[in-house]
Image (cartoon, rainbow, N blue to C red; front, side, top):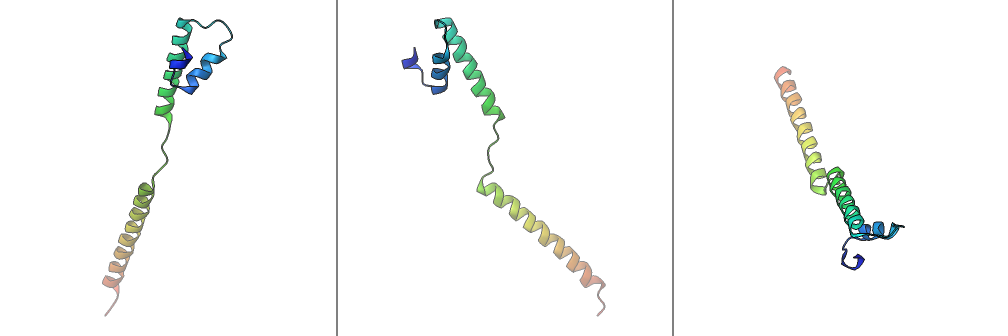
Length: 81
């Protein structure tokens, strides 16, 4: 059974079994490992990419420019002359 198994994690779990390994127990362990893998996939948080970081930086930069432009336009309106 171990020869056909693709997952090193499942192989390790099967080898950890001290009692006689049956087909039923093998399937149970494989299902548990698959369930854990599925849950871990949904819990994992991907790291932000360089594009995401650039997008945040550009947004902040654009917001700062817009704020500066609005302050500057108010200053021009209220400056005499």
